[in-house]
Image (tube, rainbow, N blue to C red):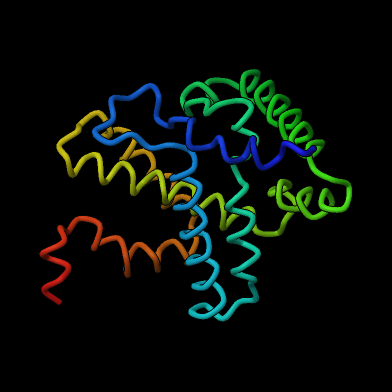
Length: 192
């Protein structure tokens, strides 16, 4: 018996943004689906708009598993995770151990492919998945602010700065073409 998928499917039980009051809760499964969609879009932009080699399907698959170890560790809030180098290093070791534990729950025949999916840093697409992860956080902040939840103001500002600092043409293109719609309501979008 192999427990890999039973663990991964528990993502829906892990809430994100745990240190903040949320107008709408977000679980890890929802976040992962959004990151996969955004990563796929950024990869398509890289390939089809910027005309650079890219495999959007591979990028989407990597994004689907980018937070899989958190099924064992939970979601450590960003301000805690990056509070200082010692905490970041220690949590990195915990994530590595969780990744190995998850991989041990697979049959030997499937393990090599999942090792590649869970090794984002060496995938060649780390930048796209990381950008999609930040973009998902930015959209979450935008949605929270739209409800009047000022608790997300600082996270919104910091996340926007970090997206800009990535200096990625894929992100800029997405922000120009798609982000304005996130400030609209359904009626505004259906008027086009």
